[in-house]
Amino acid sequence: MDCRRAEELLSDHLEGALHAILRAELEAHLARCADCRALREALDEVVVALHTAPDLAAPSGLAERAAAAAMARPHAVVVKVLAASRAIVCRHQPERAPWAASSRK
Ligand SMILES: [Zn+2]
Image 1 (cartoon, rainbow, N blue to C red):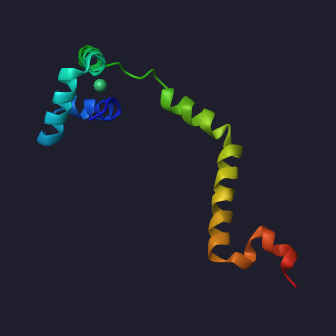
Image 2: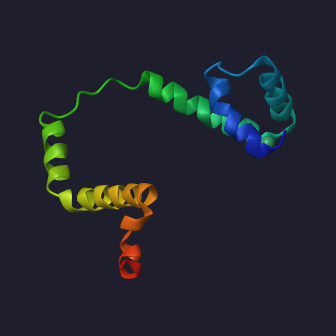
Image 3: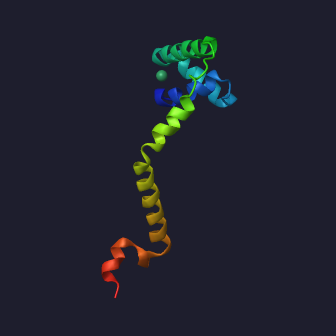
């Protein structure tokens, strides 16, 4: 196992969700790799900090303000929707593709 693979597996390892075979391979890697051990210790600290952090309530009106901000920028959403629908039309009806218009008779 290389360090990249070990890094991918560390969060599953911390959650206890790793298959026994992968866990053994990861632990063997950790036993010989100081960098990955340091990363695991740092992740352990993050997990502990997250578990001990108090639950915070969202500020009053946050959802409404976020929705209003999103609605204030509908242009980008419309463009994406139109682009997606055009792609669907083009896929199902190639003769309706914008680039096919000049070849129509
Ligand atoms: Zn490593």
